[in-house]
Amino acid sequence: MKTKLTFCALLLSLTLVGYSQSMTPTVVNAGGTSYADSSISVEWSIGEVAVVSTMTSVDKRFVFSNGFLQSDLSCKDKDSNSFTTDEITVLPSPTYGQLEVWIDTRQQGSLLIAINNAAGKEVYSQKTTSYGNHVTERFNLKAQPSGTYFVQVTLLPAPGFTTKRGAYRIVKI
Image: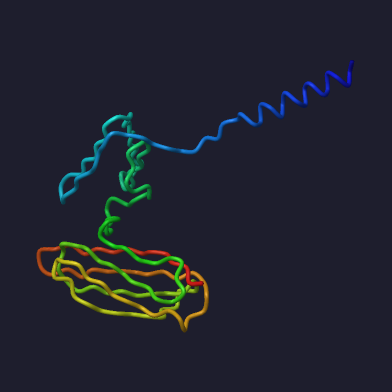
């Protein structure tokens, strides 16, 4: 009797494993998009709950938000002038050596692009000009050893524009 009960429990558990579900984070919505300019940022979504709560540090320097509509999940210092996520694209990462930096900013001025290794030593430096349109800069890291590198982009503005900075991590294999 004990053997039959054990066999039935084993058979039942194997049957249940065959019908188990797997869960992955998935979102299905009917539509939505975002809009941002120098004074406002708006995101909207159709067909899902869009609750976002915002918290500010005691010294009011940092703003943290959590919730569903999060286009940029990094913690930002609101006093800094960082590039937005759609202004700078560094690709590919990982790379075998060829690297491109795409700069899409409406700001004008001198662009300084520096690539540093993990020890902080500068391995490349390039200066170019932004006229408020797309700029692509290419770098060849084939001669550099495999490892982590940091691409630093600084915009020194023309009169009437704002200094902007960004740092991006890449991996060379």
